[in-house]
Image 1 (cartoon, rainbow, N blue to C red):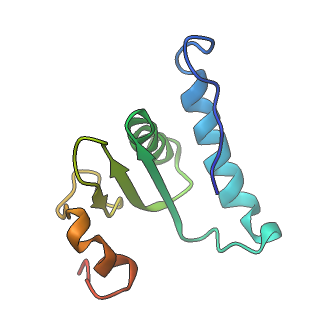
Image 2 (image 1 turned 135 degrees about the horizontal axis):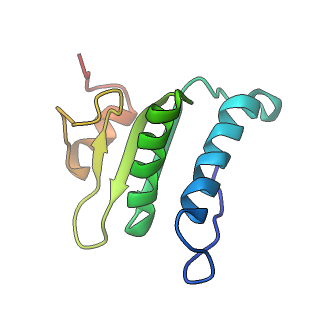
Length: 110
């Protein structure tokens, strides 16, 4: 699912961030009504969206939820990185070449 947020310069900080957090919280609380398993949330973003995704994870931790289990962050000039978010300072950072192993369950975070 992809949530929209008001873009700058129309929206002043922290409007876009609060909107992104609100969408994440809504999905966590109401995902079952859409036949989604909202107990396993992930966030992703490319460029500015990567910053927004990381900021949503930090807000979620600060505000006590929702729990976000995974981030996929990308920068168009670099390969994507995959971060298990229960540990906010990542112990594991993978390049895109190994990312498919995580998605397919072939690589463990234990």
